[in-house]
Length: 246
Figure 1 (cartoon, rainbow, N blue to C red):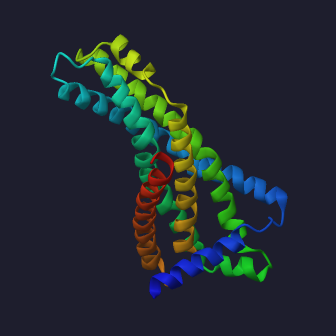
Figure 2 (figure 1 turned 90 degrees about the horizontal axis):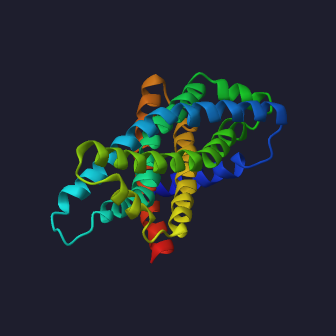
C-alpha cells in the first residue's frame, strides 16, 4: 500500500511540475544553470567511461573470435551494435542516475529541511515548477547529445584498442561499422535516452522534495533515489526493448 501512495504522490507532483512557469526570465536562468550542472559537468566522466568500455567490448569480441572462418569485420559490427543498443543509452544513464540523481535529491532535500521550499510557497511560488521543471527540460534536451557523444567515443575507443593491440586492423573494424547499418537503432537508443532522462530528473526530485527530517534523512533519500531510479531505468529498458524491437 505504501508503494501505491508513493506512485500517486509522484504523479500528483508531475501535475504541479508541468504548469506554466510564473516568471520567464528566472526560469531561463534556472534552465541554463541546470544544463551546466546536470549536463556539461557530466561530459568528462561519460567520455572517459565510454572510451574505455568501447575498447573493452572490442577486445573481448576479438579474443572470442578464434575461428579463421569468422571475418574480423564482425568485431566492428558487434561493437557498434553493443554500444548503440545498450551500452551508451542504458549503462551511461545508470551512471548518470548515480551522479546526477544524488545531486538532485541532496540539493532539493537540503532546501526542504532548511525550510527554503516553505519560504517559496509562502511567497506564492509553485516550488515544484520552479525547482523541477528546469531539471526535466535540461536532461531531456541535453542527454540525447550526451548519449550520441558516448556512442562516438565508445566506437572510437574500440578502434584505438584494435590498433594498439594488433588483434584486428582498423580497416576491418571500420568495415564492420559500415556493415548492415540500421538507422532505426539510433532512433531506438534516443527514445530510450529520453525516457531515462525523464526518470533521472523526476524520481530523485520526488525523493528530495518529500524528504522528512534532517541531514541524515537527506543522505538516506539520496541513496533511495539512486536505487529506485536505477530500478526504473532497468524496467523501462526491458519494456521499451519489448515494444520497439520485437
